[in-house]
Amino acid sequence: MTTAEANRLAACAIALSDGLFEGEDLSPSAIAALLSLSGGEKRTIGEIATIVGLTHSASVRLIDRLEKDWLVRRAARRGREVNVELTARGRHRAGALSKKRSVFVTSLLSRLPDDERAALSRSVDQILSLLVPEPTAAGVRTCRFCDVNGCGPNCPVPKPSDVAETA
Image 1: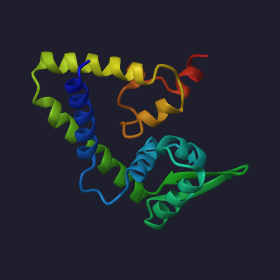
Image 2 (image 1 turned 45 degrees about the vertical axis):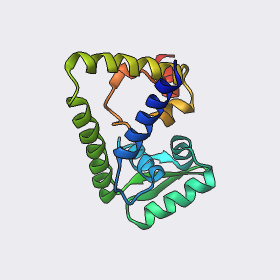
Image 3 (image 1 turned 90 degrees about the vertical axis):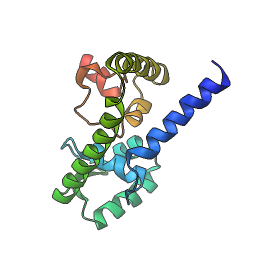
C-alpha cells in the first residue's frame, strides 16, 4: 500500500465519521449509548462502558447527563449493577439518530454505480474482518453506531454474543 492509498483510506474514515452525526448536540459517546439501547433491551452501565469505550466512572457521568435530559432511566438493579433503558423520549431520539445515519450513508452509497457499490461492500467486509478477527469487546465497540437489527447473521464483525449463540 502506498502512502497516498493509506491517506485516502484514513481521510475517508474521518469524513464518514464527521458526516454521520454532523450538527448533533450529543457527544459520539452519548449517541453510541442511545443507539446501543435502541434494540429495547436494558444494559448495565458496565456494558455501555464497553460499547462506548469509556471507563465505568465516565459512563456513570454519561448516563447521569442522559438521564437529566430524560433520554434514559436507571431501571432495576441486578446485584451491584444498575440497568439502564431508554425513555420514550430516548427511543424517539435514538430512532432519529439511526435514521440520520442511514440517510447519510444510503445517500452517499446511492451515488455509486451498482458494480462499484458491490465491490466496496466486499472490501469493507474484508477490512472489518481484519480489524476485528475474533469476538471481543472491540467488535461490540466497532458496531456502536450500527442499526442493531441491520446486518442480521451476515455481520462481518464477530462479537462475543455470536460465540454464545453458536456454542
